Length: 630
Image 1 (cartoon, rainbow, N blue to C red):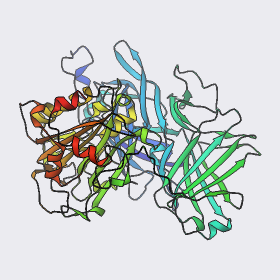
Image 2 (cartoon, rainbow, N blue to C red):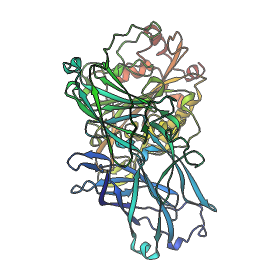
Image 3 (cartoon, rainbow, N blue to C red):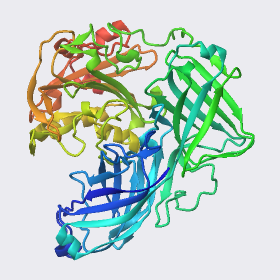
């Protein structure tokens, strides 16, 4: 997978001064300015999408990497050369900075993708960072790919440390060009070809939803995904442990969330009987004699096909080439058809409507009634659950209902309990929903900065208001990073609202858990949700960084629920809040209303997975204190 072609990476480095710092901290006279551009010409590996026409991996538009100079990092987003897709130009995202990088020699480092980040340790000289000594990065066990390419967010690259001299002449010219900046792939990319000879499968019209690859060693000590430590050096990055010592067990590079299974969701859903290919990104592992590998295929109809193979000769999945394996789905496979589950007597019976996406979680509101929502067809909606681990209920982060046409979010639903609260700071990893789930063209460009007052630019006139607050997801980095995805943001008045009464309510909700889980729906009110075209209120319009028009909601709401038992609730408490998107000096308690009142305004149905009688009772409460003390 190495390419001999060099490709251009232009990085505009913005330097800002910390308030209160003195001129003795650095040679301010020779420090770079906000218009300084550091251009890195890379060699070696191309990335991040396999192109059969090139027989190589090319860069993708919007690839988000991170470059560190003197231990200070900033995001860099790719713009791809149309004539040579193995060439990409990276620039610092606006608002990022290098703090007082002056004339002198500095260590330049980098890694991809930005979302792999978990942690970073630094070497320092006095009070100043010099370079990163250890990166904590995540190789996800749940990946999204197609039959023609792998998940780019799983493809981890780390650059060789490079010492770069920035002269006063470079600063005067506002530009520095550096050649031979080299990235190395830290993971193995494998193409699996599935060949069908099983007679039952050859007669099946089912489509493939996901494929899984599992490694089972005699000692159960081989893992192919998880959280890893990597030490970047001038001679190439190395896998290390938490103390930056060499890994003693080459079968296990991971220190947390380690998994012996990688599951890939195939978004193009190939037909099973025709045979297909799938791509996996794993650690560079050796499958040794005595190991067993298990291949699991799940169809859209719920059928599972399992093929187990005992390894008879060593097979190494390498980081320096495309690995290929053939999986013969012959008459030795195990086929299981889906079964209709028996209803669980402890499962809530449901409310007046069917929950969105058919989910049984208590926070999920009803699906839209009829075929439209205020004139918006359901095909225009993006509805999705984000997970911060294996895709099961305990790892759900939030579920979103987003309008692709208006590029606005109607609601976000999530649970809140002690497992979500930790000590991490905001990650500020502003990012898009992965393009394989929601095309970037349907998302506002608020990744590089907030909303603007005019299509051609102007000032930031609204904040990127979180619907699920960052401060309510501080237990893990991924959990927090997902709160900075585009569909969790909407335009909000900052002073007195997003930074005032709204923020105080968010904090109060976190404090009201009382050892329980709070089920939350936070949303916007643009128009009714019961099939009527009546507009409730778009107060204004704003613009994203590409000049696309974005509606500003006139109203925001939040509905809250607590129960005595999540599986068999018999008592509960609920309350709602209704706000106008404007500055207010009033306390959040004065905005409390009943859930019934909000349902009437919106034409929606909340907490439909509660038993009907209990739902009807709790949705009448208007007292915050009654709810918070439950």
